Image (cartoon, rainbow over all chains, first blue to last red; front, side, top):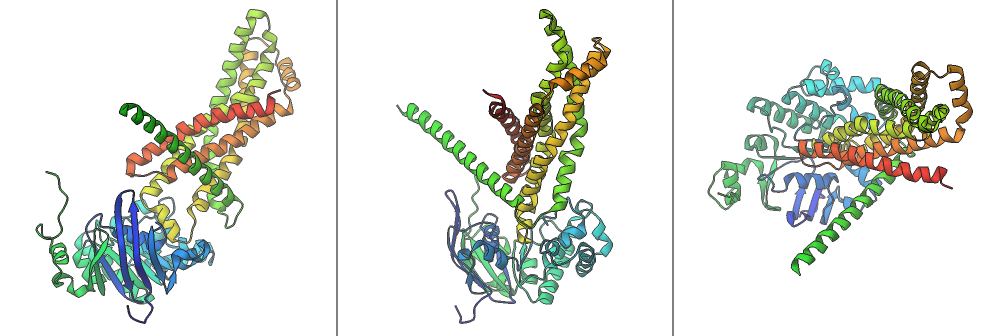
Length: 258
Length: 261
């Protein structure tokens, strides 16, 4: 570990659900203004890792530091404040279907009580335009949008409070390749524009290379490789190579019953 | 010997599970209630819940009350005729409706309509990550989703029961005067002379407790639902069943508190 304090540092983070160990001593540093992509198979613990950092799941052991401060040992109100600087794009968008699109986008701003509803409506239009949607989309309900539009609205919501840290959970899942590339482009633009630190988890190798500066692979609750995202396809690590090339044979054995 | 131990272990697991659920429900209720009194307050969410529980339940509660009053008058008349006490119909109707049938039947109907809807809505939010999304947007889901519904349940149910009381008595009045030949003036005088403030107040207190129970079970089951559409379905069923049983149990406890000598 270098002398520079990373934006996010995880040390020995463990989490089990009953007998099933999901995170088994995760150590991971994410330097400020870096985009880290975490890859790994289904059920390898990627989403749990993000939820632990977000405070949605409490780890059983270990330390999670944001800007050098251990969030797990902060008083609850301070934890909430520390995590208020994190924006999250959920896998399925997680838009509030009882609210119109504009209120979804401006939800964080309204929740913090910083702006009035009329101003929030205008700001939501600006954020929608930043993700390539017309401001008029704000009047629709989330159910009226296509999957790609929902993802873009969710991205607008995630960036609306200008977070220091952005998390992306499978940003391109369920989208066609072109829309996936559009979303990746928007993600990169937003991260650059805000100067944020980003962590994305994905199965999509094209997306991983587009979004990430750095990459790490998680397998059976441990980080088994980390390095530059550009080296994902020729990492020299047998597990990463098997995963990124989608080979059946290799050190990762799928638990299939025949 | 092994089978006996297995049976004891199964009973033990069930008891521990019941204790755990009761404890979790008590903590959930206390947390939800505490958020009613601590800012920020979500007035829009409260107004929406009030409209859903109160206004949109009016037709079903009104129909239930009016038919209950009508049946009650008819049953009382034919039953009491066996010992020549037909004159007590007005007293029986007003007493039964205000103390018991108004609040209990209204609550059971609202439980089926609103408790299920709350569990389904919050359950869907849970399984589609919307509740997690609230947390990431500086919003406490207990404060935003649960507290306004609990308060709306407590406020709306007594208002519904006022309507149910009036319509229940009206149902009895219609049958008694149009079918059973009672004098309208005498019937109303008898009703108003007989009913006491405590009869109505006890019914309204019951209604507030039932409203809380309905909202609590809807929110609790939805909030803790797991496993996609099937989990949401199970949460919806559990919310209605648990609320209905708790309504009947609390009805006995409150009746004991108000009227036992």
